[in-house]
Length: 401
Image 1: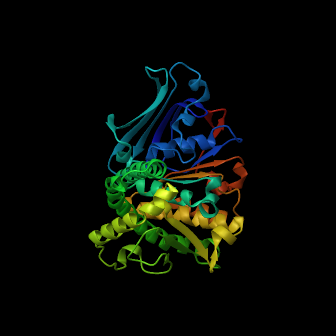
Image 2 (image 1 turned 90 degrees about the horizontal axis):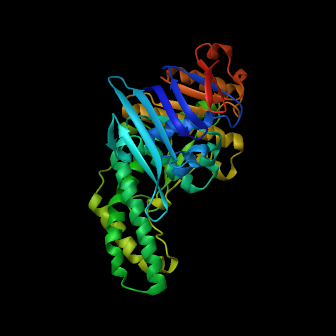
Image 3 (image 1 turned 30 degrees about the vertical axis):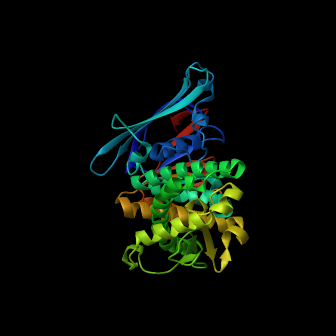
């Protein structure tokens, strides 16, 4: 798949943008803070309905629009697939309430029909590599869980639905736990919320296990190539609750994920074990005022040659792990959707040595559309630049160079 056109109004640094793009590499050249990253953010936002850089949609509206009477932002793209095209639109509008307050409303349309956010899955798939992605390895576990959530949300509407229901039930249960701690009451009130956590939490865990298994297979081989054969990579999945497996499951060298045999999953057994655990921990969780068990506490670790890269890896090693992970994400999306996702790379070459730069640029020849941001076009060899569309961005305005 590829993006044929992109339209932005009042989004971040862009007052208005109308851009046509080819099904080939695009180099976006410009100084810092001119709008390069905002363009990639807009495309990622159209793919999953949320930004990879902020959890607050209000921050996406152009600063001048925020000062107007009716602040809004509008994004639109035409995505070309193998046999059809999709038109995706997202509108953000800040509305004034009767009590004088404000509320930001988001409307998503697919081919001019209003849809839910979960229904975006599969209509625009992207892989985004940002400079801060090194935090995927060295940062907090929440970033790694979000990585899994964003990836699965691009393909499976059922995952998006389960994730939303789980997060809502978790928030309400935590609020009720604090109420029971502070004011007392019947702990049996927790049961309906726990049942939602059980049903949706098991679903999330099974999806995550499957995608980590596939990512580990691809990332291991990519990491081996990126290090010149010097190091293999393990992805260690640590589900917070899983009665059928040990606390940590290592995925390394093996058969293709889809060819490995798996034991059948007994959902009723999983549900019942999860249900009993939540019930048994009620007293502790009431005292703590929070839910301590579930996929909201899952973890991923990256191990190379027996060393935890998040704890002991150098920045260069961590960046190599992230690059292998993002390229594994690309491979997995191709496998699941039978289409090449759009690859978005922000200053990806800046911290790579010559060998890794060459390896990455050679891989891009197999991607239908790649959009790369850079402050220095000379980082790219002339042979690569000859095959790209070179655009220059300055103060939210893009021109062909």
